[in-house]
Image (tube, rainbow, N blue to C red):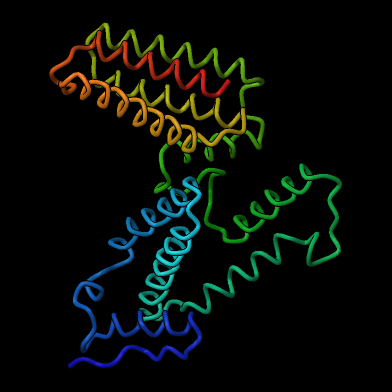
Length: 273
């Protein structure tokens, strides 16, 4: 039996919560929504966060509005499932973040003062460390760095945590030297034909690259997204130029495609000068 949607005159957030409750109604909710769990919804949550970042990258504020709504829906979905279990509800999520923001901004909501932005960042990290200790869960400094983060992002967070206690290369030049060392070890395993060890060495190379990014205050995920977009742009140019010659990439060869690649690189450099 169908029922009308929650009334439009509700506050927007209350209407969204009512819609989710309706979708999860065991009697006549949506079969797909009913079969979901925290684990099955988690990938969608991550995907929606990336779509928010993509809209920001493209400067599309209309799309950003929609994507933020999709991301909010993920929060509501998880909160609804937790409420059904008797663990917590959406209001508890909001209260928790309200309390956290006030607690972590004593220079705004209390009498704390910071001499500089660097001191403020240090204070933020100290407050986070105190919160971790208060939870009594993390036995290691690294225990609560989420495993589900993208690999490069997690590498940055792990190395940043270790750096807080002095476990860090002294300079970016030292990290770059380590990169050369790791690349040498990778090449040695490739030459030896040990692909399993080569796979591990690739991980070491990427971890060191993430450390270089952290040292230079560069988000490695942003950097690789930029390079991905650049690759797509340049390869599309190669395809378009080959199409003018009546051919597709598989009808060309590396020499011709590489020449077109260098051509578009030169054009981009000239355009940015």
